[in-house]
Image (cartoon, helix red, strand yellow):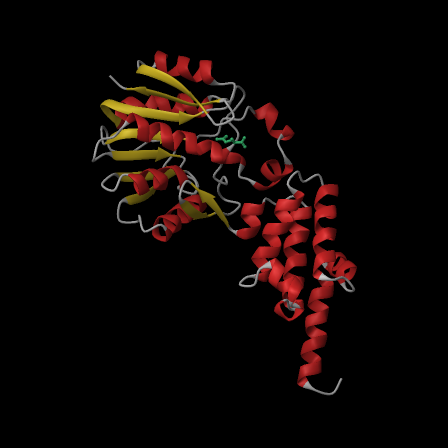
Length: 310
Ligand code: GLN
């Protein structure tokens, strides 16, 4: 070793060799990009990942940008060893079942692109059913919306993006989640109409301040938690998933506050688990809500319950 550059190369090697993804980089040392892609798909499949092809395609697109995979295959100069190294890091996380959304750091939801981390539930397509249900139920020009357990901000921000004069408050017990939600509001250019507050369910918020209450609360039964996919069970916040012994704790807590928070005639709309339609409708009824409706997601499962306060 005789120059600062040589030392830099040795230092870099030491860091790379110590990183967990070394087995992948070693396996790929002599492979072409096409062969690396095939190896990725095989490893993802072996790790039990259902969407192995898609995930490999997304990771390659992510690390090769701005070049496409096809361009990089045609011209190997478009793909550096740093990119392959980065691919190995990300692929290693995916093999260990870290969700794609957390690896890439973003997730599309409705028409928005949202930041996500391990501090928030990754927004799911099912939850768009809740957004659609609220938009269908309320066409008024102005409204104040409360999103309890706002997480990434997905539901509230999607609603505000569609109704240009609606205003909203998102509450969450998790400060880390509130940071992400606020960041997403800025990212979507909706921060002037969205406010984020730390609160448990709706406690301590001003009485009668809202026209619409929405929530995708934790609703998985505690005994089901351990059976979830590793992506969910091991990487997503249990605070946003675990709904207690019967999965309904959060609905009870929110409904206890709803009459105080929502104006007479106001809407309450919940996302629910596929088998909770009857139970949650019953809770709304017991709390005196009227016009209770059950709405299905695109797979045909019960996904949303809504009702109005009298
Ligand atoms: N639908 C989510 C899941 O199955 C659960 C969301 C929730 O508990 N609110 O992972």
